[in-house]
Image (cartoon, rainbow, N blue to C red; front, top):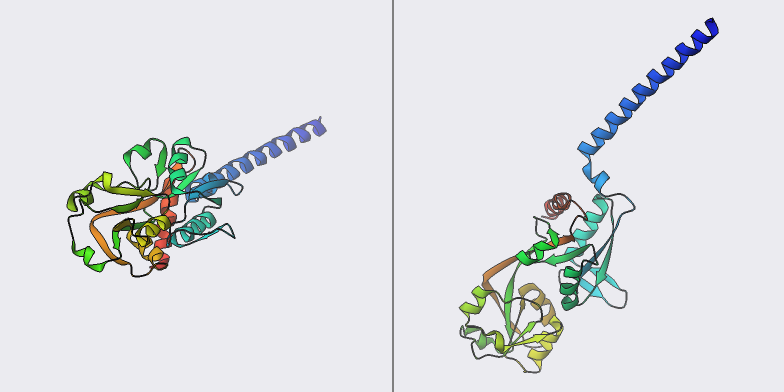
Length: 253
């Protein structure tokens, strides 16, 4: 009888200890969940396939090595490391990027302007990767003094929306725009004098224009647009990504 009673006491003690251990482990898990939510939302094995295009100086694609460098890539690497993710960056032409956004085949896209129609199928970060402006480029510096471009032939990348405020300011007609397949093609059209002007992102235009002779530029200050990382719905908590973007900016300023 004593033996059975001893066994019962031991069993009760073990159950009591197991109960304490369970409560203790649960408390630790809850602490980690509240303190480090990114550890739970971004598992070490989670891989995101993210799409961008060749858009220097923000994303510079090396076709031979199939690799990217640039400011936006530095952001992506920082986010990848601190959220314990694996991010595979995929290169696509800009026109294809726009199509893929709606299809939802990839997990994220960068860097994008946050247009209302895109928010129907993408979750945007609140913190931009960078903020930029458009630029006007020409082979004749005197052309930069002209504000009425209603009759001018102008090259612009296909898929890029011409802001209404710029169109109004310079009397631009969409029918006079010759749409190119790439920013490089835009400047080749300018070099061959098939157009009088090229309109593109000002910083990207400065980078591309280095390859061409006698290109003059004017920044168009009427319109400023921030660009963001956009994720397929439900892929990640964008607040976590915002936090990392802010941290990266703080470290590099």
